Image (cartoon, rainbow, N blue to C red; front, side, top):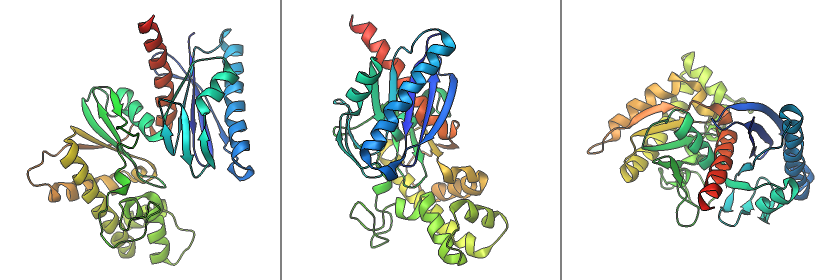
Length: 310
């Protein structure tokens, strides 16, 4: 059995897998990132997790992994394999690809978490067989992955797809990027949770609680949801106007609301388009495994590229 190691490093937790040549998840595991112990401890946790996975694979299959892939958040220099800045992990100018390659003795592929998730959704998930798509996960923030003929566009400086920082409500809530009224301040799962906490008076409320209240017919929740869906539709129409995708794939925590989200979202997007061709708007298929699967696909792509250059 040939396999690669795949790691998806998040702000609070890490997902990892052994991935076969066909994208099959052969083994899965999770661990906390341990960011409370500082950036050096986070780095050590990632390297130790990868080494443990290599041992697990060797014990199970009698041979080591072919390569490794890692997906991380933040601002990346993907060609150099360096995390330039990842606020939630405390990393700055961390040569993560080199560190993993030295620890494992393997070739390592390196990519942005949202783009790797989009790669997986485009090849083996909701967008399989679709030549042009945009993948938009709605989580703590909002980002996007632009899929073109089986690959994901990174942009000239690694910043392509930052749909969460399209201003949809000028003068709206402040965003960490320095602007006001960015999409992610209004339509991310975190933003919906905050809005519902304020409307309900329960500081512990989340976006999932808001979705349940909407399904139950609570008018306060319906107002919160309507505002978020309208902002999201505005951002998506901007994206489809610029990119003309055949499909919009919506994932992340907010998408778990199912038709509570997708029915009004499709209606709102349809109401806002004029000359644009309306794409299919579908839920993501791979859930929170997308980033990990994408990291595995990157690792297999790296091996294919190495063979091609020999």
